[in-house]
Structure formats: structure tokens, C-alpha cells
Length: 206
Image (tube, rainbow, N blue to C red):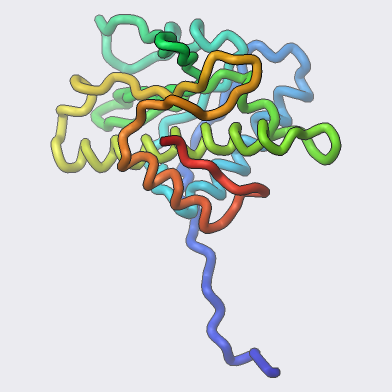
């Protein structure tokens, strides 16, 4: 059948802005570059379905706690950030509200361990760990959209109320999304990216 006249559904343009992905603590330069490049690739694809235009940047760190403490949030006098680490949950990702000039933006900080599987291929990759890594990234991207929406509706209030929003996984040897206390709105936004898998099915946190 001739389908030349059939309208093609266009892939939406990515909302990924010009940002910097910083990889900290990985001494192998090639490995660090591969992780940063793959993170850009995933962010670009997720940005086709989640509005991440208010994303300030992404930090992937081996020392997640240090990265949280040292993040420049653009406002002086704020208490240092710390990971979620209670009731069997260990934080692995946090969407941090920052001020850049007069604009409220969101900076994503990720623990390197749980997201490193995104650079592995073929027999070297565990699919469950890969899907968990994608889910963490997509979920934090959903926070970027959610925070921007709230700032638009309630200007100058989000930064005070919500300096950091974190993802957590069970503190076991295998990082599986469980027992995560997240807002349902973010979970719905994160699940939107499953409409076009990023090399795997994306799991929304719940």
C-alpha cells in the first residue's frame, strides 16, 4: 500500500535547555565522559515528553552527600542539603531549587552508582538496573516540570517551601524502586516518558 501521502506524526522537540552535566569522583576520564554524554542523550529524549526547560544542570557524583552539601543554590544562608536516609530508604537523587539571577530553576543531583548502568551495553548491562537508572532520571526530570509549574502559579514561594525534593530507593544491595514517598503528580509526569521508551521501559516511581 502506498503511504506516501499519509501524514507522519512528528516527534516533539526536546525541551532540554543548554546545560552542563558535571560528573564528579570518577577518576577514569573516558568513563566520566561516556557517563556525561549518555546522560545528555537520555535528558534530550525525556525532554520530548517532560518540560525540563527550567533545568539548571545535572551533577552526577560518587560522593553524593558532598555534592549536595557543596551545590551552589544562589542564595546565602541556607542550611546544607542532605540525602533522604531514614526508614530503610537511601536517597539517590534530589531535585534542588536554585536561584540563577532572578529565575527559579532546578538542579538535579544524582548518586553515580545507581545511574552508571546507563553507559553499559549488551552482556555487560543488567536490564533491571538499567531501567531503575532511567526511572530515577525521568522522575527527577518530572520534578523540574512540577517545580516550574508551581513557581508559575505561586511566584517566589517554591524556593522557601521546597528547597530540595529527593528520590530514594531501598537501602539494599540491589537498587530497586520501593517504598518511595513521592507526589502523585510527579509520578504521572514521569510516566509520560514511557510513551517513547529510552532504550527500555521507563518506570515511574510511586
